[in-house]
Image (cartoon, rainbow, N blue to C red; front, side):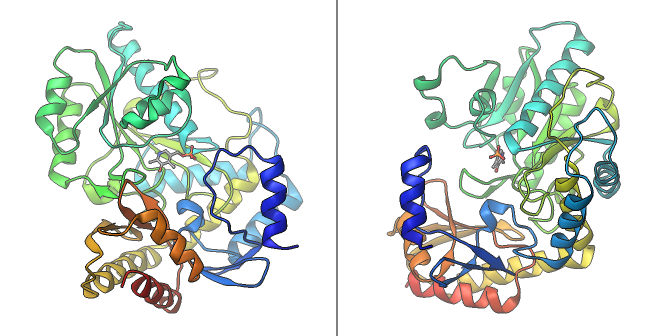
Amino acid sequence: MTTQYIINLADEYVLATYARFPVAFTRGEGSTLYDPEGKTYIDFASGIGVNSLGYANTAWVNAVTEQAAKLAHVSNLYYTEPMAKLAEQLTRRTEMSAAFFSNSGAESNEGIIKLARKYSYEKFGSQNRHVILTLQNSFHGRTITTLEATGQEKFHGYDFFPYTGGFKYIQPGNIAAAKAACSEGSVCAVMIELIQGEGGVYPLPKDYVQELAEFCAENEILLLVDEVQTGVGRTGTLFAFQQYGITPDAVSFAKGIGGGLPLGGFLVNEKVRGVLRSGDHATTFGGNPICCAGALAVLETLTDTELSEVTRKGEKIRQTVLSWNSPNIAEVRGLGLMIGIKLTGVSHRDTVVKLLDSGVVALTAGSDTLRLLPPLTITDTELEQGLDVIRQVLQ
Ligand SMILES: *Cc1c(COP(=O)(O)O)cnc(C)c1O
């Protein structure tokens, strides 16, 4: 089996919805990936922020395979231990009140959108108070509703009309704009990414987020935080909101939680935990025992010490990249192991292609940014090797 064989087979039988790179992977170990020809790649992408523990992590593999051998799925009509334990872990470590589990980021955001509208309806008795504010340049998913929640024009093409309605977009960092948008009384929630990921790795200013949280609380507007990308240790704390000094009413997560298995969900605080009741929200696969067993292994690995390592390694990457003084690097942004390198004079996509040729997997974000999301467990040696390749490519 060769890379070309896999590409030809997929091109013939798989819908061409992705601009895939001409690379196939067959296995991984630590933060290193292998293609069918045996070429190795240092992974600075984690399958888009998913493989928190890298590849073939022993604790994760054991947890998943043991659970698969015991019980793979029973549906949400019955109780299973991995889901119950995972909800306990997540709520204890965030001081949130309860969890709901789904299968993806978009689906998790759909859940908190439903929650916000129902909370508002029950509290104010009016269907008109249903608008959700999101930020310009945000990304919230690919379903019809989360596409519309996404604050980027390019995602609102006429090809998929009609969208569901009920979203307005405000400028990130502008508290006056947020207040003005709420003045008519139609807004029930604000949904934000604390670091805009797909949009280019733009962290929101802390004082803006805190002011926004205060304003929302004073006006019975829910604060929904989309931590699908920033969550589960990526920024150096279990959730990024813990560094922003706020408590969301609901926070969604997905990508990194399952350590490579499809799992998502959201956490709610005490105030809104009674909103979604029996029959209000459901999914067949959500909180599947195998995925939850994998997630428990992820959380067990991400101790406070391991999380401080995420902060240290992120700082090391930023310092190293800045020290190159490369004319192609305009700015370095991000928090923990979520890093954006704004490029100038070279295209981000061309750079990612060159990096792949040279054995490093990296991502693009926004229109001009190279995005690095290495596994949280990446070793210093792998990190240095990968950075060395990036330095050569950007010279
Ligand atoms: C990736 C992402 C999503 C969508 O997640 P899917 O699992 O692809 O549905 C939503 N929000 C943010 C912030 C993301 O990064």
